[in-house]
View 1: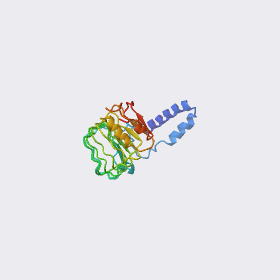
View 2: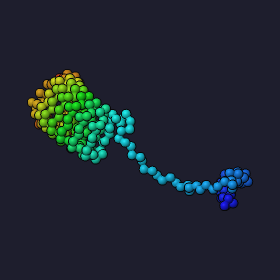
View 3: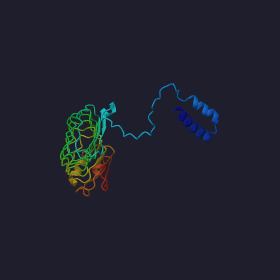
View 4: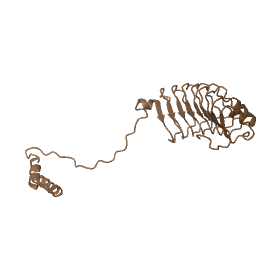
Length: 256
């Protein structure tokens, strides 16, 4: 039994010596000295086989402080989503799914919400006073109440079914994208920091656009008004006199 083992060692050594040019006698002697002592019981060893590829270990949803505050479910074919356990959540990205309901009432620290491209008909933001950025484009939302979101700076609500939009309680607002809705009027007199407006493809008449221009703050800004009934007949000088640039032809409706 041990003689066969020595022969195997010798054969392996000879093969290696041919490749490496080492001394056969020295190598065999070294291997023999390492041979199992005959007085010791034989220990069966499992044959060495190549390790099979292991599937990745599924990670829990929450495994760090980062996961507690930032969750990304972007384009996951979700029809339901429960984030009620994440009271410290600051950022939630659940865009491009199939959600018809989204409850963020248990997330008072939420600062950024991206739920674009779902099937939402309503969105309750009354429990999110820290909200800074909202993207709810491409849903079926008919009414949007942002009165409890005084820190809101960016609002993207394009391609919904909004007929009114009250922004009087959003003094921090800087950017508004509300293209592709059914808006007929907009008052920005309380939004003194706003500098970017995309209001294309709504129902603004010339009179409604002129009224909107009159509420713009007096500082440099950009407003895009194409594809409204009053685009061609409105008085853009009202806006330009306030240092605003008025674009009547731009057809790309912002980040939609």
